[in-house]
Image (cartoon, rainbow, N blue to C red; front, side):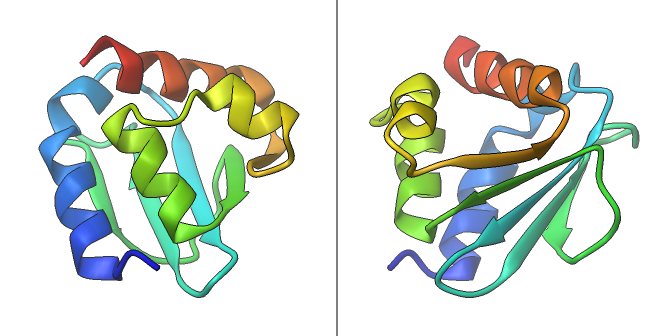
Length: 102
């Protein structure tokens, strides 16, 4: 299980790629914790939180780390049930594209 501090640091390293997001995304970690990304803020805000979001991603902390590091395809994670999306799937796809373009 990836710890919250490591996840937040890794996401902060990707903050430049997230500048084009334009939406609020929350990641509900199945093994505990929530991460909130405010892609409408300038600069992008990444923190622990359970704020309202345009899209909510549900996945384990390990799978989130693999996604962010490019070791797990978002499409494979979704199609195999390791990633669940509530809300706009378009926002989730945009987020995935921003991670992949980094």
